[in-house]
Length: 193
Image (cartoon, rainbow, N blue to C red; front, side, top):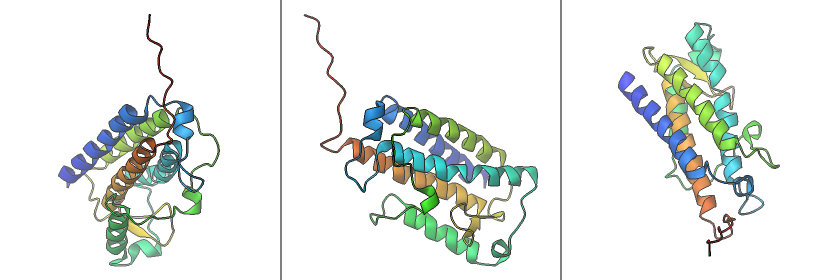
């Protein structure tokens, strides 16, 4: 089991490093630029991840403290396995079908802070530490409720899989924004004459 946790931790760490490398030097203007009214900016992609991932942090804390209580939905057989697989498949970046984020996980519509990438990386480090702290637990048997919907349950292991695949999906979305023809370019430095 810990082998897969190690792999997911490595992937989460790589996402944080890549976010810093690819988006860390973007200006506030670049981070907030949107390719269209109904499309997200780079900052909105990471704001969405910050908001979504923050829902998992108290759940993992409760597991670590031994204070997690099971709901009726979590005790139903088969449902957690079905929901987990369904979400992992639907969030896979290879899926081209657009999905609408739940209302409470919609990103802010206004100017987001230029520190959004730093904020994401900081939160990612916290999430990674919590993942490492749970690696000796039977993560397939610990069933949690999704922070997005109270009727959706899956294993904590599936939660980690969902987090990583979800982050990859929005990382790629943010990368596509920077490749748009109208994406603001940094001012050219004047050559010394």
